[in-house]
Amino acid sequence: MNKEKGVNNYFTNVNKFEQGDRSESVDILKSQARIMGTIEQSIIPGLPDDLALRCISKLSHGYHGKLECVSKDWRDLVRCEAYSCYKARNGWSESWLFAHSNNQLVAYDPDADRWHPLPRNEAIQDGWDHSGFACVCVSSCLLVIGGCYVSSFPREEPFVVTNVVMRFDPFKKEWKMVAGMRTPRTRFACAAVSGKVYVAGGFNLTQSS
Image (cartoon, rainbow, N blue to C red):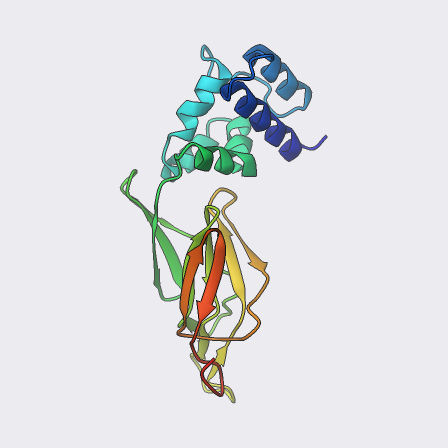
């Protein structure tokens, strides 16, 4: 059984425990996690794992870099998808402010009072400036949608409008290309409603969309 599946199963069992199904004790949950090869020791020695999990989950995401340095178990824990869902379900997912300058996205964490540079978005090639795109947050991930790539050097095409959508996962700290828009567009309206993304208006190479 792979590590991520084991961690996800651990969170499922902890959620059951917290929701009132006490047919399984925390010790049994720990034993299951050990069998899966995900958590070899107590999360925090001296504390029940469900309480330790709550303590870690309430820490700002800005401290995850330090959490990952504690142990391999902690690193796997804070990077797994179930961890982000657990934080969101309990209302512990903090709000971040994202800013863009010179093709570099940075995030401000108000709880930790820190700015964090995001990894490079591989969709942006050297020699091109990205502008006119939209950003929304869905399911604790940042989506960078569409926009226009403007060449820094004389070329046949001085700019290119794109339909590409890139998703940044702050827990895994990685970008991933997801399904693109049907129409390339830049300088458009965009909003996230009930977990879905809506776009309207904007321009492509030849006409308004």
